[in-house]
Length: 72
Image 1 (cartoon, rainbow, N blue to C red):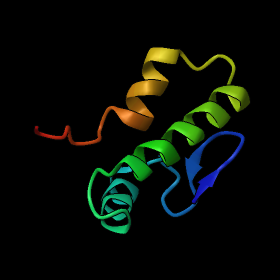
Image 2 (image 1 turned 90 degrees about the horizontal axis):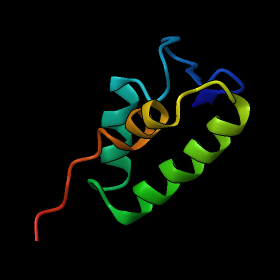
Image 3 (image 1 turned 90 degrees about the vertical axis):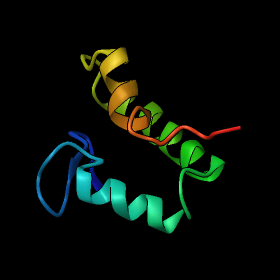
Image 4 (image 1 turned 135 degrees about the horizontal axis):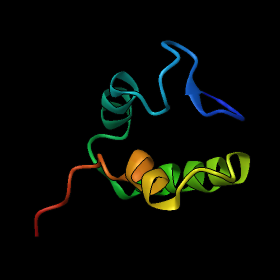
């Protein structure tokens, strides 16, 4: 779980979602599903409100940039 307002991992103290949590989230959501992207998007919005100095491009990459892209 993230630790607001700094959005760090409660397990390791790294920026959330850390590499371990990313793997766990992919497993929980059965891969890079739309549900996972929606969940992370809501986390992104909350984190930007908690961390107003967080650069938006960096926040987007941190919360969504690691998701595997779907192949059509």
